[in-house]
Length: 201
Image (cartoon, rainbow, N blue to C red; front, top):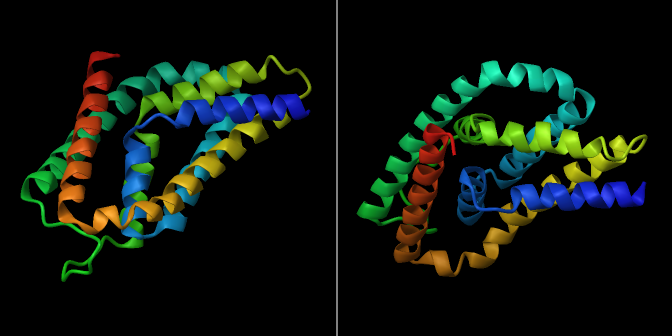
């Protein structure tokens, strides 16, 4: 059981640790200190549900994916392009900082809708959490549940570490210039992922 859980944890961590649209969003929320717990929990729970689905119903997921793939691909790309343009505009204009301003921050509902979009409109999340994790879990007959729990634990550990660990960078992001760099980097990441989705990469 232990080796299956550890393998699941390491695989799960390896799949989500790369910088991507979802991680960039969580990082930004952590830096701003806005709805951090809700965002981290949403990301982790979504991963857990998809992992459970992959381990328990790999065949169904495989059959359903071809029909969902074009919708997810183009819908996700459109969302990422829009967010990339928004981030690029913020980087160009500057002026953002951790100091309180007169601007009204996004509501919890709006933040969670964005979080769900970053999480669920990316076809790669299904390839990773549903198909890949589900396939590897088959290598641990009788211990699939332990493997899945290990992978789920990795998601919870990573997202909460990223969201709450971002506070250690707050002194740096007290300066507007740092936000311009971050927004510019996020714009590039979003645009690169959108391009990869559109080109089938």
